[in-house]
Image (tube, rainbow, N blue to C red; front, side, top):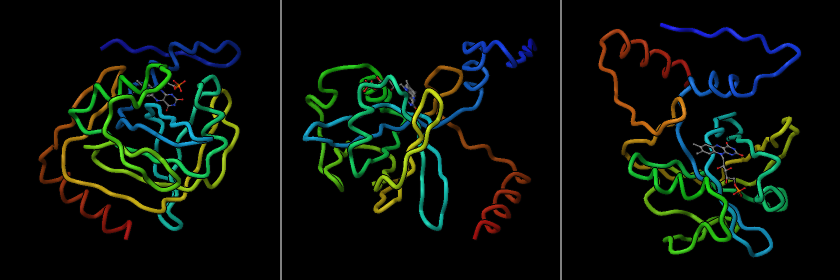
Length: 184
Ligand SMILES: Cc1cc2nc3c(=O)[nH]c(=O)nc-3n(C[C@H](O)[C@H](O)[C@H](O)COP(=O)(O)O)c2cc1C
C-alpha cells in the first residue's frame, strides 16, 4: 500500500496536510445562527465533543467565511448532525449563497438559531468563548438543549460522503462496554 511521509517544518504543503487529515473520518454537521436578523449556516466537520461537565462542544470556522461576522456577533449557535440521507443538505450549506435556507423547512431554536428538519442530533449552544485558531476561529459552546434520534449518520472520509456500518466483533463489544463504563 503506498504511503506518503511529508515533513511540515519550513514549507507547509497544505494539500498534503488536507489529504492526511482527510484520513480521519468524521460526521457532518450544519452549524446555524441568527445575527442582526440574518440567518447564517455552513457545513462543518470540525465539530467535536469537548467536556461533559460542564457540557461543552467546539467547532472551527474559516476566517474567510462570509458567515464569520454573524457567528462572532451571535449569542448562540446550533450544531445539527446530518443523517446519511442528507448529503444534499451538506452540499447546500457548503456552497456560498445569499440565502442557504430558501425553501427549507426550519423551526426556531434557542437564540433564534434556525433548526433543520430530519437531522440525527442537535446541540443548541450559548457561545461560551472564541479562540484564535490560525486561519480558523475556534468556537466553544455550552450545550443548553439537545435532541437525538436513532438512524444512520452521514460520514465524511477522504473527501467523500460515506455511510458507517456497525462492526460486529465479540472482542470489540466487550472492549466498548468496558470503555463506556469507565466514562461513567
Ligand atoms: C464536509 C465538509 C466539512 C466542512 N467543514 C468546515 C468546517 O469545519 N469549518 C469551516 O469553516 N468550513 C467547513 N467547510 C466549508 C464550508 O462549509 C464552506 O466553505 C461554506 O461555504 C462556508 O460558509 P460561507 O458560505 O458562509 O462562507 C466544510 C465543507 C464540507 C463539504
